[in-house]
Length: 238
Image (cartoon, rainbow, N blue to C red):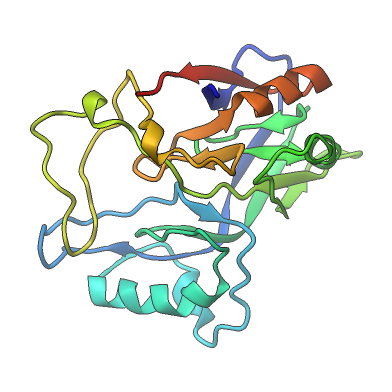
């Protein structure tokens, strides 16, 4: 099996533009008690999550950094609502994508390198092909034109890692308290074969969550069905 990275197709004829963020999120961490770092990223998103039953919902509405104890408290409040296989991190995005959209969209849309949207009809076609791990979640995007498409966000779980051979040999282990790794994604990525899930045709890397990966089955289905809007870049493995 071969694997590919999904990226926006900057050469396409589509003019669609999305500007938005998820309805809720975990805070970042301020001054970790071990590594002293302040950090957070919303590149892990779980759009199927509904936090409405949480009594202290306002705690998830404002992006900010908090002491690690507060971050961990909010993690435990959110955890019962997460999909199976979800991994949290500081700044993780929760709930539907909310914002504005305009222009002409292709069947597949990558408004950010870590986000993949799909038109409803295109998702149905891909699911009919038997592709695994395709969970389309409703968005709350407001369109500026009539006859706007129904864009769904694919919920992409973190699985798989890069091989140590493409990472700096002198790298430090993750912080034992907050998990921060402090690594820049290498230009020449190499997938670690032993970590790749065998039951998913679409996933994001666990250690570099901006990277969305798909199988050749996913690529073949998109090409056969004429579903464009993104590019597929081969990812070597070891």
